[in-house]
Length: 220
Image 1 (tube, rainbow, N blue to C red):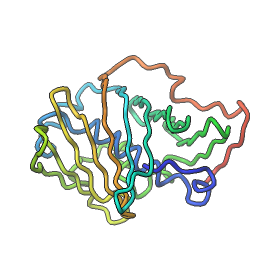
Image 2 (cartoon, rainbow, N blue to C red; image 1 turned 60 degrees about the horizontal axis):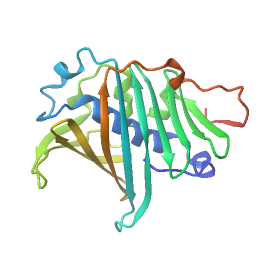
Image 3 (spheres, rainbow, N blue to C red; image 1 turned 45 degrees about the vertical axis):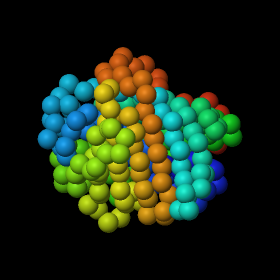
Image 4 (cartoon, rainbow, N blue to C red; image 1 turned 135 degrees about the horizontal axis):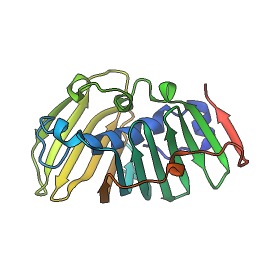
């Protein structure tokens, strides 16, 4: 996921950042510790209504120079609502309320938004909105470990997605790391901690007050 300046987001729309955010969320939801491919998916999804986790994100360009380091918290409420909240390097929030996706830069007091259908088109995030089996959209296989964790690789089957490869690392407490490679040569690593399954979440986490002031930029 790229941390885009709003002018860049305005030129490109919201699809790129949303693709990375929801790929991360979907991966965290769907593959429990010890999974080989997707055989434990149904058991893990049964009864899952919400998630909360802290994250640390490190993004590198094609020559492996670090471009960004970010930290924050994400919240998920099924179906279709999430909040991806950055505390560093700048306060920024990405919210989906079930109908629209909002990218809110708190420091610039600016919100960019799109319909979920448009924002998620052509990305693995589309799976959040339907009940398709994961193997319809991804090829999943276990890969060799060099750090004692169990690793699974996901390769999107669609040709029109920015994300071309995802690696998920599972430890004793569940998913601990995710590495994503995109079609621009960038690599993003996400480390997850303090994962909570089915916490009680305030509905206000998934709301954006359009009357609160600032600029609202629509890409529909």
